[in-house]
Image (cartoon, rainbow, N blue to C red; front, side, top):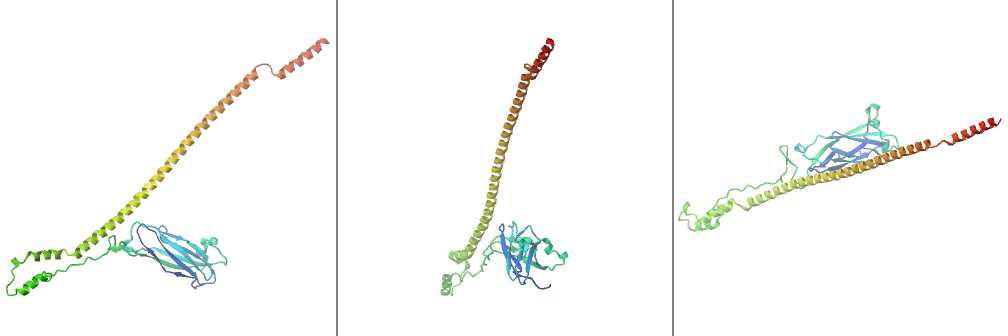
Length: 301
């Protein structure tokens, strides 16, 4: 049996990667045959991914979906690339099989069954409009990507039309550098501190402040989570201490009751023994009476 049983769409597992956030993607399996087909999903990194369901039955000429969830990651991989692989195994099972009827022997090649295998690779995608996840030289760039415009040097004379008019009017008299008005110097200073550079510095400061706020928010979230866990542990410890105290009190009361019962039993034993020692038993008295009657009868004879 060499025909394709199942068509897989898509052939790549694409995850939108964000630090400390889970990401999921769905894969659709289409049964192209008239048989019941069982599938099983394997991965090279089972600790990083969660597959639901990882096994199942696909009815004839129908489809089935499974979802792969990538756990939240604390660090980004180099160059935003992962070498993780997924393997989807498919095989024909008896007609009318259910999910609970799937056994590992269905996917064992030693049984001689036909097993169709398809490999899927993992692709990481940066979230839209996100300043992070821009790999630079193998490291993760946490600052927003923007270009700082380069200011070109412009002649001072072109930027001061008032001086040009003065020069055109007095071309016959040369301009001495020492006699250049202070207005020209002020204009050059204004050119050096152009509004574009100011806007760029302001945008850079805003971006840096956003990144710092982003990190601070994550740090505060971690601190709050740790505090919540500590409070939960403290409450559990308090409950355990109260339970131990109650058990100790119950143990003490049980010991006291046991001692009291033992004392009562000893007292009863002594009381019974004292009653047994006082006077003759009834059977002994009856016996003596019979003996006396017998002796009297004999003496009369």
